Length: 582
Image (cartoon, rainbow, N blue to C red; front, side, top):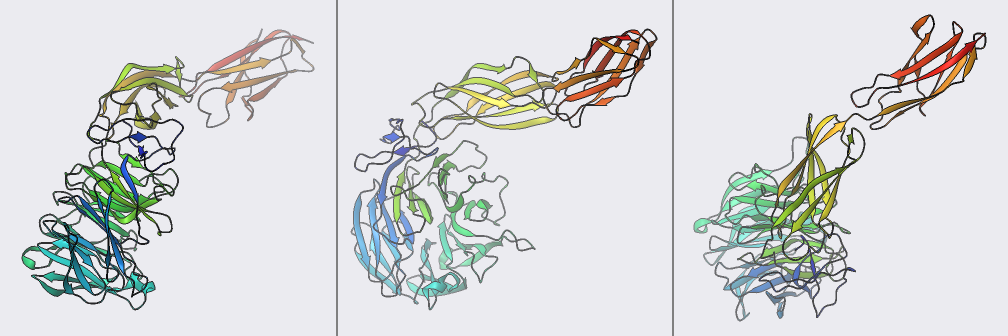
């Protein structure tokens, strides 16, 4: 199975590549087709959402329901909607709220869905979908965030007279603690974000705004109905660089780590106890992708990293949660009217067992939305290198192209998009990364290199695996790299005279790496009086040179032109014999 696929559902035609791969994911019941992009997604279902704005996503794993809120905060009299789906993407209901709806949060037992309205908190029974008012609140004009933590409900209350100034609204952290509306006393500027985590902990993060040039991230202890602030961090350095540009945040499954989608940095991984950077970090997102969302799977295996990207650049990476695990991620590209164009900020949640990822995507202008229900592969297949490595040309030369060829064999269904191997060269100066090479449909691959050092070079080719294939055992191959050859060609007359002198022209050629400077050639003259060294000649940029001399005696005179070679090139020499007359 390939590292990235896109499903073709029978009830919803989708754009397909010229070559299709149909296969079943074990235990998942998926029919998969290769998309035209270099990377694509394997989705069980894609749903076009009946909303024009998006504020929150909640996943009820007990009753297998997905709730998506349409904030609709553009006008204070607007009503809101909550779209309800099952885990297969089937539409169950659309709930209309009496005022705009923003944050959503499930109770600890998933029996109640809490929804943040303009002036109240409302709940819905997750089985019957019957509504009930929990409490009246201070007016929210911009959209709330909700989190259920420590057995209590916490929510933000941003207030701004105008919708256009919501980004810098004065926002308060409130709660329904022991059944009573409580103003906690914590507040700051901007649409503060909340995220509940294991161990009665809750994150609060501040998006970057004009009144918060250096936003914060902080952890609260919510035990016993109290709200005690723990670790806190601002990220800018003394010069003001590196400030947090928060789009999303999530606790790891065990609560020991915090992942942050930072539009200016990528995916940060922090230690929960002090919010310091972890020893191992996640790799950078693909070039051109800006972090927008992040979510750990409930079983602790996976991390989903959402992004905003264009073209064939991945919008979503699904990878091992352990940053030390270098298994290649599944890469998802969302592009166009069937997929959306990017993952919405705060737009991902997992089912509790990690079997499904629910991702909300949006178009570039943010007016349309889609729900993707994605299942990671249930099976990994073995891979192996076969037949060893070969190289050509047979004699490797410093500074000239060298091709190494091999074959990778994989079990299971044929990959829908090509697998890739990585390669390194180790020589006297260390180990050098040669990047990746694509494995062809027949399993063969070619690694290209240009060794720049004489001596033995050991090549190592690896397949690190992906979420569908296990890594292969590395394969190595040692090549002896020789100096690049040089040559001198002379054009001389058969005869010359003592009076007129002689002129010899020539060409110097050096293969391999270009010389740092123009070659300087040694010129010797041998006649019946002995051998002497003439003035050296410098080779022109086009490789040509000229030797001029007034012979000192008649009869046969031999002119020898030579170059001593260097660390990467062999020496060369050439001679010409001329009969000298009066």
